[in-house]
Length: 232
Image 1 (cartoon, rainbow, N blue to C red):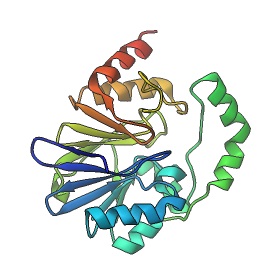
Image 2 (image 1 turned 45 degrees about the vertical axis):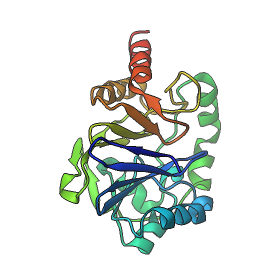
Image 3 (image 1 turned 30 degrees about the horizontal axis):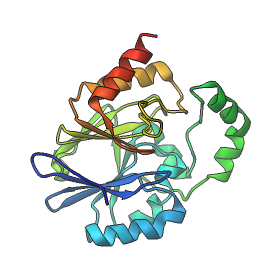
């Protein structure tokens, strides 16, 4: 189980890897999960939770796509946790619906054009009502976690990132960690907005960026990619 730790002792553990990552933030007696992975990974997710923490207080969804939110309803019932999501995607979560998919490069644009309607129907997930809605920024300190949530739109309108103790950023699909030397996502609704979000993330000073797909990325790589795509 991959683990990162800040200088102040806040721990981030990767619960699920592979196609969709899920993370757990542990700050003393307080815990927050970030994204849930796919439904077929639920047993693995619960087993990892048993190894890590007896319960979880909050679930932060970086956005409302099925591969991030598919287990949200079950986890809310199982743990009695409170769900945090951006306000612009709360109604989608209540219906178990996905935000619109759009490609950022020619192949993914073609895939999105062909399968958008099918995607939204096939990957409908169990609806759940969120408890806390985020706007532009949300301080996690009152919840017992040294961190904050930033609105980082671009992949979807309501994409958010979690900044842990000013050192580790959990960024959902705002960055991808699959291709070597790249953070560029294959799907996104608004590329100019995504570039602004990259700049916002780079400005946090975090040393580690953990995407929902692929491996960790550095501040140096993010900064290089930001300059490349912001000034083509």
